[in-house]
Image (cartoon, rainbow, N blue to C red; front, side, top):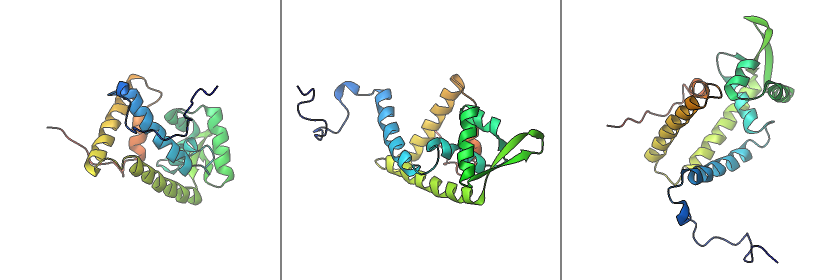
Length: 184
C-alpha cells in the first residue's frame, strides 16, 4: 500500500506556508537555509570540501595570513579534518603552507595566485546565489534583512560561542560590508 497515494512528485497546490506554521521562525529559517545550501553546494561542487573548502580558501586569501590552529578555531573545524582539507587544497595548488616567522613550529596557510583567482570566482558565484535567494525582496529589504540577520547571528554567537565567528566574518568582509541600517 502506498503511503502517499498521490505521489511525492505531485506539485503542491498551495506553494505558501502551511497555516499551522504561520510565524514559525524555525520553519522559515529552515526553508531559506535549504534553498541557500542547495544552490551554494552546486556552486562549490568542484572544490574539495565544498562549503568548508570555500571557508578555508577564504581564510587563506585573507590578510594577515593565519596559521592552521587559528583557522580551525575561527571556522570551528577539527584540526585533523582541517589538515586533510588543506592537503587537498594544496594538491590543487590553491593554498600553500609557509613557516610562521613568529613560531617555527606553526604553518601559515596562504592562498596561491590560482587559489585567489578561484576564490574570487566562487565568491562571485555565491553572491549570485545570495541574490537569487533574496530575489523576492526589494533591494532595500534584502539589505535590511542581511543587516538584521547579521545582528542576530552575532548575538547568537556571543550567547553560544564556538569561536568569535563574527569577528572572523568582519575581517573577511571588511571591504565588502553592506551599508549599516539605522532605526529611528
